[in-house]
Length: 319
Image (cartoon, one colour):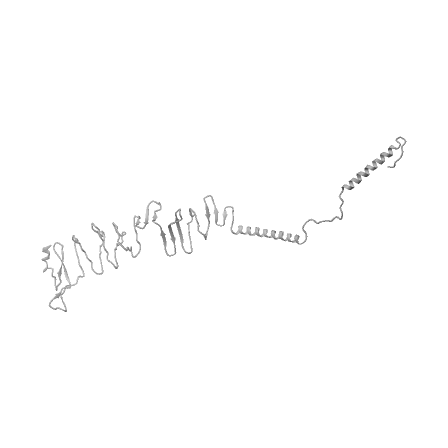
Protein backbone atom coordinates (compact mmCIF):
# COMPACT_ATOMS: atom_id res chain seq x y z
CA UNK A 1 0.00 0.00 0.00
CA UNK A 2 1.39 3.49 -0.60
CA UNK A 3 3.19 5.15 2.16
CA UNK A 4 1.44 8.13 3.59
CA UNK A 5 1.46 10.22 6.72
CA UNK A 6 -1.45 9.79 8.93
CA UNK A 7 -2.22 12.64 11.22
CA UNK A 8 -2.53 10.27 14.20
CA UNK A 9 0.55 7.99 13.58
CA UNK A 10 2.83 10.13 11.45
CA UNK A 11 5.86 8.33 9.90
CA UNK A 12 5.35 5.03 11.80
CA UNK A 13 2.61 3.81 9.49
CA UNK A 14 4.82 4.15 6.47
CA UNK A 15 7.59 2.16 8.09
CA UNK A 16 5.25 -0.73 8.95
CA UNK A 17 3.98 -0.92 5.44
CA UNK A 18 7.50 -1.15 4.02
CA UNK A 19 8.51 -3.87 6.46
CA UNK A 20 5.45 -5.95 5.53
CA UNK A 21 6.24 -5.65 1.86
CA UNK A 22 9.85 -6.71 2.44
CA UNK A 23 8.75 -9.85 4.34
CA UNK A 24 6.35 -10.92 1.59
CA UNK A 25 9.05 -10.55 -1.00
CA UNK A 26 11.43 -12.66 1.09
CA UNK A 27 8.86 -15.43 1.50
CA UNK A 28 8.16 -15.46 -2.22
CA UNK A 29 11.83 -15.53 -3.07
CA UNK A 30 12.45 -18.38 -0.62
CA UNK A 31 9.58 -20.52 -2.04
CA UNK A 32 10.85 -20.01 -5.56
CA UNK A 33 14.35 -21.14 -4.64
CA UNK A 34 13.05 -24.35 -2.86
CA UNK A 35 11.13 -25.64 -5.93
CA UNK A 36 13.22 -27.87 -8.26
CA UNK A 37 13.91 -26.51 -11.58
CA UNK A 38 13.06 -28.91 -14.46
CA UNK A 39 14.92 -28.29 -17.59
CA UNK A 40 13.97 -30.05 -20.88
CA UNK A 41 11.29 -32.43 -19.49
CA UNK A 42 10.88 -35.91 -21.36
CA UNK A 43 7.77 -38.24 -21.29
CA UNK A 44 8.40 -42.09 -21.02
CA UNK A 45 5.46 -44.44 -22.08
CA UNK A 46 4.26 -47.08 -19.52
CA UNK A 47 3.14 -50.68 -20.77
CA UNK A 48 3.95 -53.26 -23.54
CA UNK A 49 3.74 -52.10 -27.10
CA UNK A 50 4.74 -53.42 -30.49
CA UNK A 51 5.64 -57.06 -31.30
CA UNK A 52 5.91 -57.94 -27.59
CA UNK A 53 2.26 -57.09 -27.13
CA UNK A 54 1.25 -59.22 -30.14
CA UNK A 55 3.29 -62.24 -28.87
CA UNK A 56 1.71 -61.94 -25.44
CA UNK A 57 -1.80 -61.96 -26.94
CA UNK A 58 -0.86 -64.99 -29.11
CA UNK A 59 0.37 -67.03 -26.13
CA UNK A 60 -2.71 -66.15 -24.10
CA UNK A 61 -4.93 -67.28 -27.00
CA UNK A 62 -2.93 -70.51 -27.41
CA UNK A 63 -3.24 -71.26 -23.68
CA UNK A 64 -6.98 -70.68 -23.85
CA UNK A 65 -7.38 -73.07 -26.82
CA UNK A 66 -5.27 -75.75 -25.06
CA UNK A 67 -7.43 -75.51 -21.95
CA UNK A 68 -10.60 -75.88 -23.98
CA UNK A 69 -9.21 -78.93 -25.84
CA UNK A 70 -8.08 -80.58 -22.57
CA UNK A 71 -11.47 -79.99 -21.02
CA UNK A 72 -13.21 -81.48 -24.05
CA UNK A 73 -10.92 -84.55 -24.05
CA UNK A 74 -11.46 -85.07 -20.32
CA UNK A 75 -15.23 -84.98 -20.75
CA UNK A 76 -15.00 -87.39 -23.70
CA UNK A 77 -12.85 -89.87 -21.74
CA UNK A 78 -15.24 -89.75 -18.79
CA UNK A 79 -18.13 -90.40 -21.15
CA UNK A 80 -16.47 -93.27 -23.04
CA UNK A 81 -15.05 -95.02 -19.96
CA UNK A 82 -18.37 -94.58 -18.17
CA UNK A 83 -16.88 -93.05 -15.06
CA UNK A 84 -19.33 -92.79 -12.20
CA UNK A 85 -19.17 -92.19 -8.47
CA UNK A 86 -19.03 -95.97 -7.85
CA UNK A 87 -16.38 -96.85 -10.46
CA UNK A 88 -15.78 -97.01 -14.18
CA UNK A 89 -17.29 -99.14 -16.94
CA UNK A 90 -18.06 -102.69 -15.76
CA UNK A 91 -16.03 -102.09 -12.60
CA UNK A 92 -17.88 -101.13 -9.45
CA UNK A 93 -16.32 -100.49 -6.05
CA UNK A 94 -18.57 -101.71 -3.24
CA UNK A 95 -18.17 -102.24 0.49
CA UNK A 96 -17.43 -105.96 -0.04
CA UNK A 97 -14.78 -105.41 -2.72
CA UNK A 98 -14.66 -104.89 -6.47
CA UNK A 99 -17.53 -106.06 -8.69
CA UNK A 100 -17.20 -106.71 -12.42
CA UNK A 101 -20.29 -106.96 -14.61
CA UNK A 102 -20.19 -108.51 -18.07
CA UNK A 103 -17.11 -109.75 -19.92
CA UNK A 104 -13.76 -108.43 -18.64
CA UNK A 105 -10.26 -108.93 -20.05
CA UNK A 106 -7.02 -108.84 -18.05
CA UNK A 107 -3.80 -108.31 -19.99
CA UNK A 108 -1.51 -108.51 -16.96
CA UNK A 109 -1.47 -110.85 -13.91
CA UNK A 110 -4.37 -110.51 -11.48
CA UNK A 111 -3.72 -110.89 -7.75
CA UNK A 112 -6.83 -111.34 -5.62
CA UNK A 113 -7.78 -113.15 -2.45
CA UNK A 114 -11.17 -114.47 -3.53
CA UNK A 115 -13.19 -114.66 -6.76
CA UNK A 116 -16.86 -115.61 -6.77
CA UNK A 117 -19.87 -115.02 -8.98
CA UNK A 118 -23.35 -113.84 -8.19
CA UNK A 119 -25.82 -116.28 -6.73
CA UNK A 120 -27.87 -116.50 -9.91
CA UNK A 121 -25.04 -116.82 -12.45
CA UNK A 122 -21.96 -119.05 -12.95
CA UNK A 123 -18.32 -117.98 -12.93
CA UNK A 124 -16.64 -118.35 -16.33
CA UNK A 125 -12.88 -118.09 -16.89
CA UNK A 126 -12.12 -118.04 -20.61
CA UNK A 127 -8.88 -117.86 -22.58
CA UNK A 128 -7.86 -118.33 -26.21
CA UNK A 129 -5.09 -120.73 -25.19
CA UNK A 130 -5.42 -122.08 -21.66
CA UNK A 131 -6.37 -121.08 -18.14
CA UNK A 132 -3.69 -121.58 -15.48
CA UNK A 133 -4.17 -121.17 -11.73
CA UNK A 134 -0.98 -121.09 -9.63
CA UNK A 135 -0.50 -121.35 -5.87
CA UNK A 136 2.72 -120.12 -4.25
CA UNK A 137 4.13 -120.03 -0.74
CA UNK A 138 5.38 -117.00 1.16
CA UNK A 139 8.75 -117.26 -0.62
CA UNK A 140 7.15 -117.14 -4.07
CA UNK A 141 7.83 -120.80 -4.90
CA UNK A 142 5.24 -122.68 -6.94
CA UNK A 143 3.42 -125.25 -4.79
CA UNK A 144 0.39 -126.09 -6.95
CA UNK A 145 -0.77 -125.52 -10.51
CA UNK A 146 -3.99 -126.24 -12.37
CA UNK A 147 -3.97 -125.84 -16.16
CA UNK A 148 -7.08 -126.16 -18.30
CA UNK A 149 -6.05 -126.47 -21.93
CA UNK A 150 -7.63 -127.42 -25.23
CA UNK A 151 -6.32 -131.01 -25.05
CA UNK A 152 -6.14 -131.84 -21.35
CA UNK A 153 -6.59 -130.66 -17.79
CA UNK A 154 -3.36 -130.91 -15.82
CA UNK A 155 -2.89 -130.58 -12.06
CA UNK A 156 0.57 -130.44 -10.48
CA UNK A 157 0.51 -130.73 -6.70
CA UNK A 158 1.52 -133.05 -3.90
CA UNK A 159 -2.01 -134.36 -3.39
CA UNK A 160 -5.16 -134.00 -5.50
CA UNK A 161 -8.55 -134.44 -3.80
CA UNK A 162 -12.18 -134.36 -4.92
CA UNK A 163 -14.62 -133.98 -2.02
CA UNK A 164 -18.38 -134.29 -1.71
CA UNK A 165 -20.66 -131.29 -1.53
CA UNK A 166 -20.54 -131.37 2.28
CA UNK A 167 -16.74 -131.17 2.14
CA UNK A 168 -16.03 -134.01 4.58
CA UNK A 169 -16.11 -137.18 2.45
CA UNK A 170 -13.23 -137.66 0.01
CA UNK A 171 -14.55 -139.06 -3.28
CA UNK A 172 -11.19 -139.20 -5.07
CA UNK A 173 -7.61 -138.56 -3.99
CA UNK A 174 -4.30 -139.15 -5.71
CA UNK A 175 -0.66 -138.72 -4.73
CA UNK A 176 2.66 -140.31 -5.62
CA UNK A 177 1.99 -143.47 -3.61
CA UNK A 178 -1.66 -144.37 -4.18
CA UNK A 179 -5.02 -143.42 -5.64
CA UNK A 180 -8.11 -143.68 -3.43
CA UNK A 181 -11.71 -143.76 -4.70
CA UNK A 182 -14.05 -143.15 -1.77
CA UNK A 183 -17.40 -143.44 -3.57
CA UNK A 184 -19.89 -146.08 -2.48
CA UNK A 185 -19.99 -147.50 -6.00
CA UNK A 186 -17.47 -147.38 -8.84
CA UNK A 187 -19.33 -147.42 -12.13
CA UNK A 188 -17.58 -147.81 -15.49
CA UNK A 189 -19.92 -147.07 -18.41
CA UNK A 190 -17.47 -147.53 -21.29
CA UNK A 191 -18.16 -150.22 -23.88
CA UNK A 192 -14.63 -151.57 -23.49
CA UNK A 193 -14.89 -151.79 -19.71
CA UNK A 194 -12.04 -150.97 -17.38
CA UNK A 195 -8.45 -151.49 -18.51
CA UNK A 196 -5.74 -152.07 -15.88
CA UNK A 197 -2.10 -152.19 -16.85
CA UNK A 198 -1.04 -154.05 -13.68
CA UNK A 199 -2.64 -155.99 -10.87
CA UNK A 200 -5.97 -155.04 -9.29
CA UNK A 201 -6.70 -155.72 -5.64
CA UNK A 202 -10.33 -155.74 -4.55
CA UNK A 203 -12.48 -157.79 -2.16
CA UNK A 204 -15.55 -157.90 -4.39
CA UNK A 205 -16.39 -157.51 -8.09
CA UNK A 206 -20.01 -157.60 -9.22
CA UNK A 207 -22.18 -156.36 -12.05
CA UNK A 208 -25.32 -154.28 -11.85
CA UNK A 209 -28.68 -156.04 -11.56
CA UNK A 210 -29.79 -157.71 -14.81
CA UNK A 211 -26.32 -157.11 -16.28
CA UNK A 212 -23.52 -159.57 -17.12
CA UNK A 213 -20.10 -159.49 -15.48
CA UNK A 214 -17.30 -160.17 -17.92
CA UNK A 215 -13.58 -160.43 -17.10
CA UNK A 216 -11.56 -160.51 -20.29
CA UNK A 217 -7.94 -160.30 -21.37
CA UNK A 218 -7.89 -160.05 -25.19
CA UNK A 219 -4.14 -160.52 -25.74
CA UNK A 220 -2.78 -161.80 -22.42
CA UNK A 221 -3.75 -164.19 -19.66
CA UNK A 222 -6.24 -163.58 -16.88
CA UNK A 223 -5.02 -164.58 -13.42
CA UNK A 224 -7.07 -164.48 -10.22
CA UNK A 225 -5.16 -165.21 -7.01
CA UNK A 226 -6.07 -165.16 -3.34
CA UNK A 227 -4.34 -166.68 -0.31
CA UNK A 228 -7.59 -168.28 0.90
CA UNK A 229 -9.25 -169.06 -2.38
CA UNK A 230 -11.17 -167.41 -5.18
CA UNK A 231 -14.93 -167.79 -5.30
CA UNK A 232 -16.81 -167.25 -8.56
CA UNK A 233 -20.58 -167.61 -8.29
CA UNK A 234 -23.63 -166.86 -10.40
CA UNK A 235 -26.71 -167.08 -8.22
CA UNK A 236 -29.31 -166.57 -10.97
CA UNK A 237 -27.52 -167.35 -14.21
CA UNK A 238 -24.80 -169.26 -15.99
CA UNK A 239 -21.07 -169.15 -15.42
CA UNK A 240 -18.97 -169.35 -18.57
CA UNK A 241 -15.21 -169.59 -19.01
CA UNK A 242 -14.02 -169.46 -22.62
CA UNK A 243 -10.61 -169.11 -24.20
CA UNK A 244 -9.10 -169.33 -27.65
CA UNK A 245 -6.37 -171.90 -27.02
CA UNK A 246 -6.21 -173.87 -23.79
CA UNK A 247 -8.01 -173.74 -20.46
CA UNK A 248 -5.98 -175.02 -17.52
CA UNK A 249 -7.49 -175.92 -14.16
CA UNK A 250 -4.60 -176.63 -11.83
CA UNK A 251 -4.41 -177.25 -8.10
CA UNK A 252 -0.94 -177.65 -6.64
CA UNK A 253 -1.89 -178.99 -3.20
CA UNK A 254 -5.61 -179.71 -3.35
CA UNK A 255 -8.21 -181.00 -5.74
CA UNK A 256 -10.52 -179.61 -8.37
CA UNK A 257 -14.09 -180.43 -7.32
CA UNK A 258 -16.93 -180.28 -9.85
CA UNK A 259 -20.28 -180.71 -8.10
CA UNK A 260 -23.25 -180.79 -10.48
CA UNK A 261 -26.09 -183.08 -11.50
CA UNK A 262 -24.83 -183.22 -15.07
CA UNK A 263 -21.26 -182.65 -16.24
CA UNK A 264 -21.15 -182.44 -20.02
CA UNK A 265 -18.09 -182.10 -22.23
CA UNK A 266 -19.21 -181.35 -25.77
CA UNK A 267 -17.42 -181.17 -29.10
CA UNK A 268 -14.84 -183.80 -28.20
CA UNK A 269 -13.10 -185.31 -31.25
CA UNK A 270 -13.20 -189.03 -31.92
CA UNK A 271 -9.98 -190.94 -31.12
CA UNK A 272 -7.95 -192.67 -33.84
CA UNK A 273 -4.44 -194.07 -34.33
CA UNK A 274 -1.99 -192.47 -36.71
CA UNK A 275 1.34 -193.99 -37.68
CA UNK A 276 4.49 -191.94 -37.86
CA UNK A 277 5.77 -191.50 -41.45
CA UNK A 278 9.37 -192.08 -40.37
CA UNK A 279 8.78 -195.23 -38.36
CA UNK A 280 5.81 -197.42 -39.28
CA UNK A 281 6.44 -199.85 -36.40
CA UNK A 282 6.09 -197.19 -33.62
CA UNK A 283 2.60 -195.68 -33.42
CA UNK A 284 2.16 -192.15 -32.10
CA UNK A 285 -0.83 -191.27 -29.95
CA UNK A 286 -2.24 -187.83 -30.82
CA UNK A 287 -5.69 -187.83 -29.13
CA UNK A 288 -6.78 -189.01 -25.70
CA UNK A 289 -10.13 -189.87 -24.25
CA UNK A 290 -11.39 -188.31 -21.02
CA UNK A 291 -12.68 -190.85 -18.51
CA UNK A 292 -14.21 -190.52 -15.06
CA UNK A 293 -14.05 -192.87 -12.09
CA UNK A 294 -17.01 -193.67 -9.84
CA UNK A 295 -15.60 -191.39 -7.17
CA UNK A 296 -15.46 -188.45 -9.64
CA UNK A 297 -11.79 -188.60 -10.54
CA UNK A 298 -10.95 -187.75 -14.16
CA UNK A 299 -8.17 -189.38 -16.13
CA UNK A 300 -6.99 -189.66 -19.73
CA UNK A 301 -7.05 -192.85 -21.77
CA UNK A 302 -5.48 -193.41 -25.19
CA UNK A 303 -8.12 -192.92 -27.85
CA UNK A 304 -9.10 -195.74 -30.12
CA UNK A 305 -11.79 -196.72 -32.57
CA UNK A 306 -14.11 -197.15 -29.57
CA UNK A 307 -14.03 -196.18 -25.91
CA UNK A 308 -10.94 -197.31 -24.02
CA UNK A 309 -12.12 -196.26 -20.54
CA UNK A 310 -13.00 -199.87 -19.59
CA UNK A 311 -9.58 -201.18 -20.51
CA UNK A 312 -7.87 -198.51 -18.40
CA UNK A 313 -10.31 -198.53 -15.49
CA UNK A 314 -7.62 -199.98 -13.21
CA UNK A 315 -6.47 -196.35 -12.70
CA UNK A 316 -9.55 -195.83 -10.54
CA UNK A 317 -8.30 -198.46 -8.14
CA UNK A 318 -5.22 -196.41 -7.36
CA UNK A 319 -7.16 -193.34 -6.29
